[in-house]
Length: 115
Length: 109
Image (cartoon, rainbow over all chains, first blue to last red; front, side, top):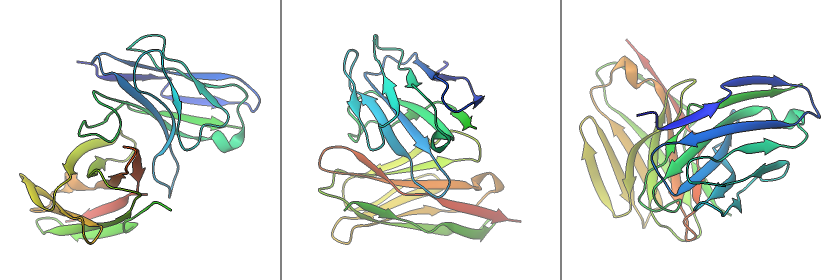
């Protein structure tokens, strides 16, 4: 069972470039999330999707966009990358709305460096 | 504002017991999660508490006191593989997760 797959696992990117982080899950979970994790800070929610066809903004959505065309895929796009977007990005899913008793399942993370 | 506080780092000895504390301030409360995260890896679920009291799962136990806004994770019979960061996350009234910065646990032989 693959669970959640993220790609790429690591990327170095020039500032101003466009970048899409891919996330695919095979658990048929309805809810999916994108977080960024920075040293000394808790996980911060960027965008979420409670079900296919809907998305919502999290705590730090600026500079990021998402789409949810189907249940399995939830890509995160940086339209014009800036150095402050250097971070580790985690995609996650759950079979209920965030915060309910459903646990989050995380992908292995995508380490992004913007120069 | 909403806040989760937990110690930045703790050190313990292999075979011993360690308690990692977490205090929370959330607008409303719908439970508290603990996750384990090994360096360079994804967080994995450990526990979820919504009622007061202690829940035990093998070597790991999690405690919640809603009146005190307090939780702890208790790890017994520590093993070297328990070296990891432990993340506390509270669930607010909108069912949003509020994450702490994590406690890095170092296990020494």
